[in-house]
Length: 148
Image (cartoon, rainbow, N blue to C red; front, side, top):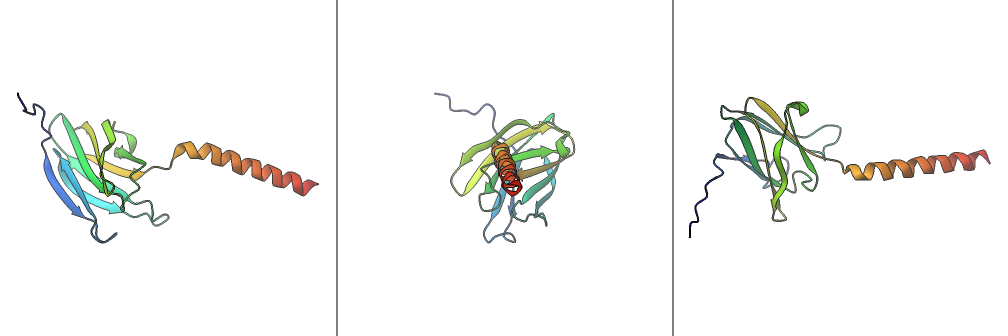
């Protein structure tokens, strides 16, 4: 029986302490790219929607990232990866590679060059239309009652 992995996931392992957001949080990144910058960004307008920013570079044809993200850091149930403000295609995304209830592992790839990768929580778009319809109907009903 041959148990050899012919396509191993090979890359440097980086661990980033996010304890300044909440005690004990660590983001682990495995990538074949050179990571020059890693930040957790907390938007002033909505501090609950934390983002992960990663600057990568590489000389291979393709780069990849596999991250383990704590649930306590970002709402991992609905996230999106954006590369170069949407100008670079995210290849082979898997935003639910593995989840143990505390961390979620995600994977994605890209053509190699210098990139800014942003991982953001994504608002559940399927809720937007029903919410908009309910608000519109409520406003129409209130206006109708005020006229009578």
